[in-house]
Length: 186
Image 1 (tube, rainbow, N blue to C red):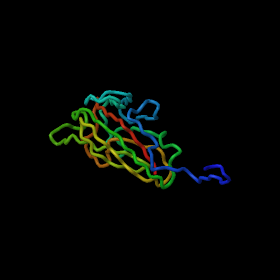
Image 2 (image 1 turned 60 degrees about the horizontal axis):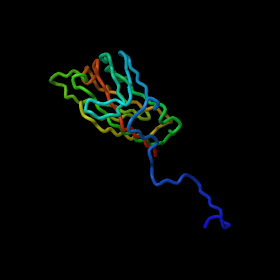
Image 3 (image 1 turned 60 degrees about the vertical axis):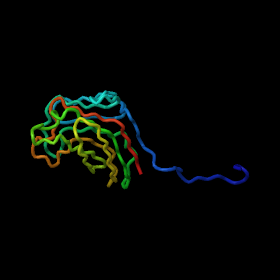
């Protein structure tokens, strides 16, 4: 029985395991996402229905052909708020989400040599992980990285590090959908 002359002391947080820092099936406008790039207008809308009929996606629409095949990428979906204040040197994080790239004809050259698989880079703590994402299907992405120094933003973009042509660069009208975002720290 507690309180019978013996103090109860705890020296830290007791947990049954690592729980997610952030977990959202439907990403909302207040979750801190922005998009940037050098070509045209980028529009983020929320709680959208993807062409596969599934609801609750955050949608990125690009109105202009992307031109950038340098290591800067064609566009950047950024979030600097979810991990803000949570990262120190040695922090390990896992980010997972579902992604859907609509219309193969709008993701790359769409010629006979185009395989309709787009390399998507998830940048976490300045370290990137690349997932090859086929168009017109929902694909689960998961990346785990450890911080070399405190750096909180994460970025999602087309991986253009090794591209020498416009293959896999989004064209005007390209759409990217994202949902089921989970971020876990350990």
